[in-house]
Image (cartoon, rainbow, N blue to C red; front, side, top):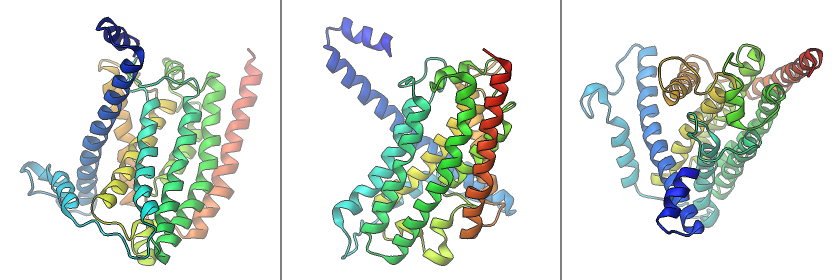
Amino acid sequence: MEPVYDILSEWGLPLVVSQLIVLLAVATAVLIFTAVSVMFMVWWERKISAHIQVRFGPMRVGGWHGWAQSIADGIKLLLKEDIIPAGADRVVFALAPMVVFAASLAAFVIIPFGPGLIASDLNIGVLFYISISSLTVVGIIMAGWSSNNKYSVLGAVRSAAQAVSYEVPLVVSVIGVIMTVGSMSMTRIVEAQEGMWFVVPQLLGFLIYLTAAIAECNRTPFDIPEAESELVAGFHVEYSGMRFAIFFLAEYANMFVVSAIATTLFLGGWHGPLLPGWVWFLLKTYFIIFLMMWLRWTLARLRVDQLMNLGWKFLLPLAFLNMGVTGLILVLKGP
């Protein structure tokens, strides 16, 4: 960002004004990228599910393979009536989707899309991501409680329990990478993978992270908070129109974020031959997203007890084992 500040200072703008302009530009770019990416991901998942189920999926809107179906669905949600239940807490009900979406967007700040293509290279980037991702649960609890609906509350409580159960192994799984690099800076972690991606020495950590990340996104087989047969539609059962669309945007934005973090921590980030760094980063990220979509349309939903047992009795001990083995190897290797 320094070259941008230099150009703006040459125009005679004060530093505060320059920072405000850069902040607005970054926020606008993130919003546009998120909207376009989510529309593509929704269309892509429909086509993937269709192929798995031996059908065609969207084919009409826009011509070629129904590429404009997501745009049409977005317009439909914009035109739908925004209904607030009579007994709902109107302020909290309105704020909940904003909190969930803001938490997903804030994580884009520390994602290094390429050399120098990062909004803010924090030296505590991993810690920032872990902290900001936990705010999603707050928005979900707000949505469930404020809706004044028993199904919403049950879905929100399930989501909170699931997030706590899988946030712990997710955090422990990335400690091995931090110990290896000696830094929590996302850029430093990517630079340290120039010779070898961390998915090789940290394969167990990668698998634990990927499993926990799928659970964090409430995706099948971990979609307990949105189990239609039990909870109608989960914590956002009372939402409609654009408020529901914001929850939908947040879910897919969160999928992109956890996949981008996996690419950064384990798959070498922007490193790759021939193609530009940002192209490699997006290819790896969308490969992780493809795996998440594939699993969604292949596996059955877990029971609540199976979900908790997997997180606390299986993933967490393995994450601690991975951390301990990594520490032992680093001690034996010496400084």
